[in-house]
Length: 267
Length: 329
Image 1: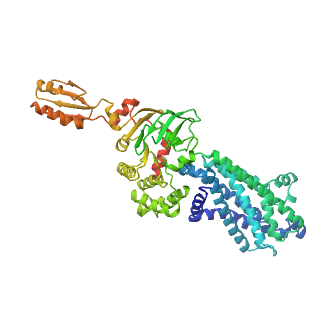
Image 2: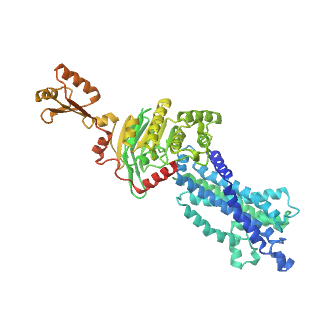
Image 3: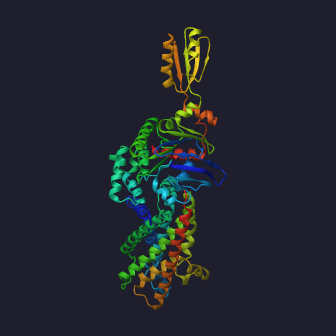
């Protein structure tokens, strides 16, 4: 797709030259992991019985890391939308619009750059979670294949979020609107999901809603891999179905971004 | 064949504003064509339509043989655009901005680098290519914008208010660069401006646009001439001498102004004045004073639009201008 490579390179260059972006993107999830993750010690709640609610996680950080990584994707994905609006306000978008490039490459380049950013953040976050005291405990049977599957889940969920925010930004001229939307959807997406709490602890209507939340699919997939590594039959079928949902949603997003941006992106 | 020909090109914005109203212009190859008008006259909208940035509401244009409605992609390949706003990314180096644009046109890296070097040379930015655009001065930034529109070796270059927000000195330097570019690259240039002096200096032909309509088109000279020529006023020692001068056959009209004063209109005082003098010499008459008044584009503009050019400015235009001025500092 013409224009995709140079535009993606531009985004990535801007990002790695300005470490502030990376640090800001990391701070919030680090606080979540260290403070929220340590605030709540599963073993003090009555041993194996309570632990069974948490998918058998040895501690809460290990349980919630999949959710935090997913939420990080949500936040960083917002930037792909903000950057589109920013280019429009500065006038840089005009240069792209009069060039013989695919209109959708303007949007896809942002999404791809966001996904790259998210993957880097995820790697750093896992490293941090591993080194803090009483931190993340990854299963002994966790293999390189599990690591790749985990990356695939993060990749798909970050693609989905980046796409949603980009589509919102395609016709928008105000930064405040997209920030407002993010604040609005952020809490429901986070709490109406399996990101932080297990479905068995939820009020039944909430756990029903959470079932359809892509945040749950990604969080639960990552969680299963981290806690068990080697998945049993029923775990495998849960994992596979979540990954398929994520995949289908990713494909829908690719098509949606393509058609909306080809016809809709304007100055 | 003309490079650009528009057929009733019209743009009505969603609010109902008719920004461009049945525009019919024809631009020849390798000329510098100036679109002169006030803020909000429809200049930028015209450029945006012709450069495929926005869709015309109705009408069409043929650009180098391509149909504006059907062949957008092909038109984008042969045009260069320098919009009114700054389009370079200040977080990148000058050369990185230019390379990114080259990649948009799939120009191979080695060709692109050679082209970029040449272009940086033309606008005296050779030493600045490797620096971040955020370090450029306002004038340098505008020069970089100028060559951004030339990376793909376009046949047609669109310049929308190329010197907006620049100070007088920097502005005249920009004019030199624009002239050099036209001479060296032989590109057709379409330029919009609300600076009369700018189009007078640069353009081979001018159209005055107001409320989205073209009021008149012509060379700067012919537009001024359409005001019926230069005015030469001469004072003589006696009425007899003045009467002799009044009889000069090359004048468009001549009249006595006062007792021994002649007010004469000629097509072009530069060529006519020597002839008048030798005509008078032959008759042994010499004037006491001579005053020549050439009609300026200011007067032309006043004549056709009924107002001076720096009358009003709409708020959106003002915001954009201030944004540019801020970033050019």
